[in-house]
Image: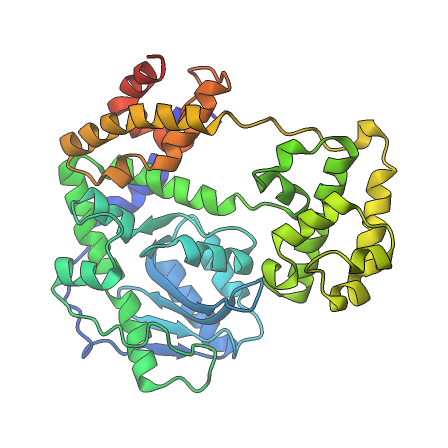
Length: 405
């Protein structure tokens, strides 16, 4: 889709929210009394309130240490009138909440939303939207790059939060009074902060910049790599051709599917280097598989036939049915030299705009731009998504001129 048209659509979406008249109110831990949502009836009532509210604050508490999928321990939601603590462990379904999360008539306010979007995407089947991230907005307002929630609440609302339950056991029941208080305060301040930041962004003429950023955040959360595409994320996959590439693709697809089915982190099941070693050696028998370094006996016993069968199938593919070869990436030294030429421009623009350098353009964006240039991408599409929009308008020409020096 044309980037300009996309951002125009985004601005129309957000305009209805940012034009609302938002009242000021004081938040303290003494006037926050959350509603516990542990039954289907309570969830339906809470979600009806959220849909009517139009703007809600959100946070999640989850665990993801020994699992492929994150385990939700608690979902916190604030409206102007209530704070809801939704217990996913007590509820059979969260479908009413999924309706709220995907409603285009409800703005969801987060702080540092990357992981929240990932977790809630599993619930909805698609990332929540539209969204507003107070951490990102705060950076545009001069609060520094990636300010923490506690620091932002202190700076904007002059409220001091207790962060003692940050690493609490959120899957354990019953929740303690300290956990309940902490969870409630984590969302109680989001709407008041949103109101202050939006006013400041409007005064600074940067509200559309932030809207573009929010849309990128959400669409990046949508960019899920499917199991059959995982091999394309490997930096060395371009070295494989024909049936060798078919073997590599098939084995990594197997690892992804099995990790998801077992709900285990992919590296707990089998590390990348082990999968690659199997792909290189192409064992066609259980005995040959068992002698490969770091292949555990339990893997051979449980999955050996599947692994060797995949290898045999891939080796029998007609060449025209094999995956298309991946392009060789440009020389890293050439990329590095171009990035070093671009960095001073970013630093100068950051000073001019009074924004953190990392917000103006991170190194990975400059690296992507350099790769595009070395691979002959045209000027119309050479800009990575995070360098399009307002960044392209403000200093895009300077970056393009520096590329050609």
